[in-house]
Image (cartoon, rainbow, N blue to C red; front, side):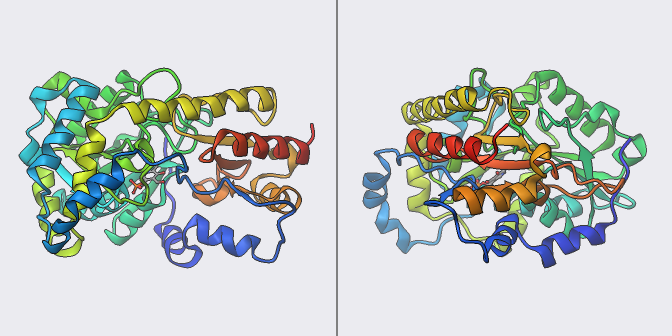
Length: 403
Ligand SMILES: Cc1ncc(COP(=O)(O)O)c(C=O)c1O
């Protein structure tokens, strides 16, 4: 059973503490790095850009003269629909004109969807939005700004997934939305088909939106993660379901700021009304790059291989330490450093002694109703640099924290 956390705590997480990265900068400001710094804190892919980005952008620059349409270009919507079909085999389900919406990266779409959801399903008493704990900060910021109570759900420490079947029916009836990340950030667990099915059935029974954050969907070790739309397609309906994805992780383009929302056409109509007054449209040249990116899988396969080589290095260097296991998806290490003093102390120590910038797990999670922050034992490391740099970082980590 899930107990709720006073929403004032989230207000202070959003407005006083700020983002985990702002907190980290403040925390490390007075400590000199003990070696050439290696930044493992931000999930910002540093692999090479796909080769077509420059030429496509150059050919499309003339389109910077035009205000883009909030619904995007037809070419963008069709390219995303074709990719969704290639990836999930759901071609017949997706109407590109009504079920695909371009975003300036998935973050703003995740945030704005909380605001839209609160109105779209606005007749609930004591409305709430469920977040996994740890969670991505756009979820809590969205709930806070929507004036809806953010409720954190405990997650499996290994997978980062929530047991939705165990939720209290009284809470379920209050929900306007559930944020669910698969692969989970930071643990990298994947929602199974059955887990999505359970969540979709609950959403329909209790009338809440499933906001599926799938931005790590293409960064996996062996098995492609099941997408929420794949499971929705089994019923031939996408009501109350929206998937969010982007090119940031898939195509090493976090600075392009381009992603999409796909799913429930009625909810997206509603979201479009809000975004059309409040959110920036996605520039047309950016959409042109996205069209090229969604038509190409070679760079994605290469990218995945590079991440998997880094996890091979982690397998060698971290086996038997810090509760390490090779995650099924995403590109993070989530290491239990309780024996070394916990996430905050170890973050300071790794910076001071080894020049490694990591994030304390507690910055990525909320203190729950029992007064426990489930991130406290952990540090998060993003394996976003090349293999040589990543290997150096892991060697320094092991040297700084001997068994
Ligand atoms: C879990 C998760 N969701 C969403 C995002 C947003 O990514 P973007 O806005 O670049 O698509 C991130 C970025 O790090 C993330 O880690």
